Structure formats: C-alpha cells, structure tokens
Image (spheres, helix red, strand yellow):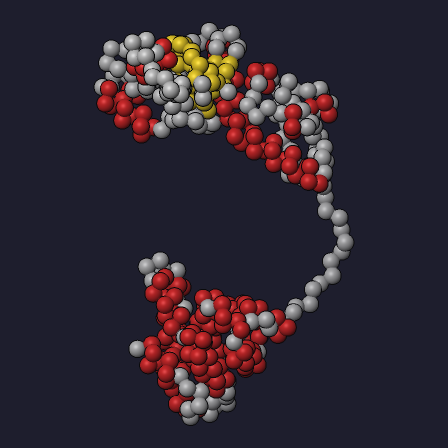
Length: 398
C-alpha cells in the first residue's frame, strides 16, 4: 500500500490531481507516521523505521520523488482560493516536515542528496516563517542545519545587555596536608596524592576532622592545570570508593571502645556496609601465592540464626555478602584494625619438583602434601555446620 502511495506522488501531474492526492491519502499517511504516540511507541519502533527506510528508498530515489511532490503540493495549497482567502499551513505543514526530518535522521546519506536541498529551499520559499507554528519552524530549522542550509535560518536580533559582573561568594576552603591552616588532619593527609594510601590508616579512621574534598571551582584548589585535574579526580574517586567503609569502621570502633560488644541496634545503612560482631580468630596461615591469610569465625546473622544448613546456604548465596575479593575490615576493641580481602579458601597446591633420573620414594611421607590435605579438610565456609553456631571466612591481609 505504501509503495502504491509513493508511486502516485508524481509532481508532473496536473495541479488539481496533485492537490487531491496530497489532501487525501498523503496527508493521512504523514499524520499517521508522525503522530507522537506512534513515534514514541516501543512496539512500533522497528516497523516505523522500516517504513521510513522504504520511503527513502535505495539511493534516495523514492524519497526525492515523494518530497518533491510534497513541496509542490505545499506551494499549491498555499495559493489563494477562489474567495481570495489564503489557506493556513497549520493542518499539513507540521506532519510533512516531521516525516522529512525523521527520514533524514534515519538515512545519513540523505544529507548528500542535492535534490533534497532543492526541496527544502522550495518549502522555505513557499511559507513565510511568521505563518508557521513554532513546531513547524523548529523542525524546518533542524532540517536546514542537517542539510547545511544554516544560512537560510532567520537570525533574531540580540538585545544589548549591560555588562554587569555576576555576584560571587568567596568561602573559606581548608586545603589538604601541610597547607591546612589547622595542620594535617591525620597521618594520611597529604597535599601530594602520590603520598596518600588508598586504604584508610588507623589515624585517619580516628580523626574527627572532615576530609579534604576539592571544590567544583578548580581555581579554589592548590593545584592548577593537568595536575589539579588529576588531584581532584583522585580524591573524589577515593572518597567515593572507601569513604563509606571508613566512616562505618569509625563508628564500630567507637562502639567497641564504649563497651558495646554485641550486635548494634537496627538502623538505616547509608554506606551499604554490613557488620558481623563477635569475631574470633581461628587460625592464621601462609600461602605461597596468597600471602598471609586469616580464618575467622563470627556469629550467625540474625536472618539465619535458626535456619537449617541448606537455608543458610541459600541465604548467603542470595545476599551476595562476603564474596571473594570483597573488602572487609577487622576491628578490635583496642582500636586496631586490619583491612583484608575475602579470598577463595581453597589452598594452593604444594610445589612439586622431581629430580631428573630419580623416582619418588613413596614410603617417605610428604609433609607438604599432608599439610595441603589438612587445609583442604579444614576449609572454612560461610554456611557453618549443624554442630557449630558460627560462620567462617578466609581473608587475605592487604
């Protein structure tokens, strides 16, 4: 049906037949494909793009024919009728321009079509800007810009404004490290970002002063240019990554110092952190690849306190807590803390090396293999077992 309609859009026809075709099926077609609800529908999105691509055709031959016909019909429709009253373009100009604009958006090669340039110039010359609706003017301006006809867009005269300086407010901004008027905030507060440790130190956690964060205005910082840009991005990225954990560790350390050793009361978790109280160190060990590892026990979370082993396993799998490579902090009541990464509890296999020309003596016990097997038998897991009211996790010290 669309193919038949496009083939009937011939600008070489008689003027009366052009107007009859234009005011009949052509306008209805443009109104349908440019209707806001049709254009915004996700269901019709692919079908609508297919229609526009077909309308443009291979090499643009159908699109040039259709929109050349449309430009001629618009000029004829604006001619005064028998009563001398000029017809308003409101009812047909906007859908025509909407269809042409969308065709240009979906077909980048249409911008190189010289015949479409002639069509747009014809429409621009037929309709005065003052007679167009705001939506029609906006669409026609976008079409001109896309086709490189920006010179045809009428430019409004700009009013001269008084050169009045904008009001500014200068606020005090405490600088980092030794540049601070009150001295360094803690032992990890430096003006040079290369001296800053990524993970917070104990002194940083215990500090009561606010961290230095650069302002949005780059001129307020202590560095300018590329160095200032890197400084701002590093400090903001570090604060976003570990700021919440640092504040959570500080609160837990204060609770422990005040003698609150049990679970904390429920509250809003703004830092997206989880606290597991009553930590107990089961053992520490050395791994030839992972380094120092700590195996710790802690109480069951309240959500799985009375659950079965399978229910605990399902809960831990769905909660995604303490997954490998998760950053955790072990906090002691004396103020000490250690940052660790949750690691895979599977021990590293012992290094096996055979001497050339010699066979292993199977009667001599291999101590490395025995230790490896012991570690495998005692591997911790988050699910615990039926005989213990504890969960276990392996942590790699950082």
